[in-house]
Picture 1: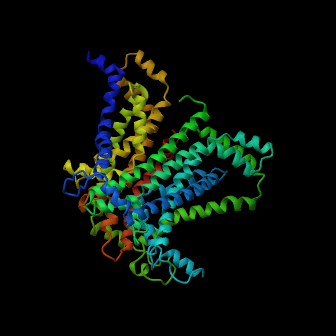
Picture 2: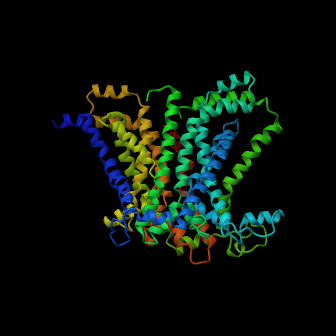
Picture 3: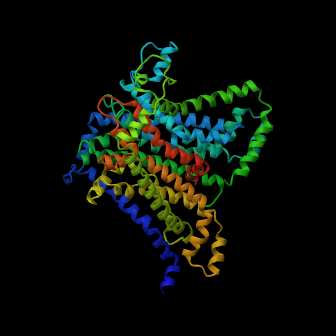
Length: 299
Length: 296
């Protein structure tokens, strides 16, 4: 009886799902619901909250800092993602060409992505230092500027500086994933196009790009998700300053919830991120659909 | 790895067309941009190394060339290892990463096998749910998780991290392993079933040995992810002696307004070293894990 049950795939399947399922339900699904619920309460650290309806959301919508953080998040996500895509695609195309030490280059390129972001952000912090920035030093020596740039002290400088650091970290990921996509494109297509007299640009536009579109959709969705919910880079570089100019929704929600003690408001801010994430996921879903349709496989 | 043959074929065909390109053109369109990319991507690491071996006097002077170091010193590393809790932070990070990686791998192997091979009722929906779980970012989970961790009484302990890291590791590993299991022919399992093997024996003796590359990919990637984790560790840990390296370097080594750049950079460098070394040994596995998760 016992062995019979253990060979029943439905029973065994559920048994095998148990460890992963239990961990995910307790530490992922439940917190997801709890977080949404907390957003509708006035919970503080060390004090249970009461249901207050939409009050947190109402406060946040009229809160100048929260509005600014939404603007910053969108700016950060859009500018960084566009740059990551353009530079990543370029780097992937470069690495896909005939190169000596190709695998070595590919390995080295990925380094910024694998080291802990918090730690590489510290290097950027030092590179952006107002007094001892090596970038300012080099530019002054070249005679391009006369005063050291205050990278993290001025709102727009700080926004662009954090975007640059994010792009630095994200380009390798995009490039290596797109490179994997490029390597699946059969070379015979390029040969055929070349024989038909297609210029390099036409080969890129009409062969590479259409075949790469599905993987671009997925990679960029991940990239947008990571960027939109980014936390550590901002936390290390600016903590949201100067004048909240670089506060993202994630950092502001941490600020309000943990040091500020206002769990309800922080959770409400985090909940406000969900619609944007859903939009990105739907985008990814349709990207995947299209890919399957192109490959002609079922479902 | 399966595309190695394809890659070689493509390499020769591209080589076949390079004679059409003149050398100067190749320099401008390929080597120059690639050189700029490599310089920008690697400069921060060079800068970390330089800063970590510069004596303080050189760090805080605008004289001389900052790109080079006149009198290299290991003073910052000595300070870090003997006068701070750095070894303890390192140890915490190792324990948390290793334990959460192995827990997640174990749970993921079972889950992936169940979804992909046992095909129990509802397995497709569970597979989709796993993919969606992979997309839930930690930055919207840390507040409710902090409340849960606190209620469980594991706030400010390593357990808080060991139990919460699987929330992003399991979905990733399961998704990756599902892809690997899919490539193992069904016939092998059918033969074993006919010979009277139980499902457990099939998993342990047939599927797992064949999925070793997948297990290594998932393990390496999971280890790196947990080593790099920041927001949970920042929220759930407050005592210095249980902090992980990324948190401790950011919160403990920054004292007031005077930044000790030397020890900070030394700390950042030492903290990046384990993942970098591991990565250098398993580049292929890491890349196939990363791209595999995106491609599936």
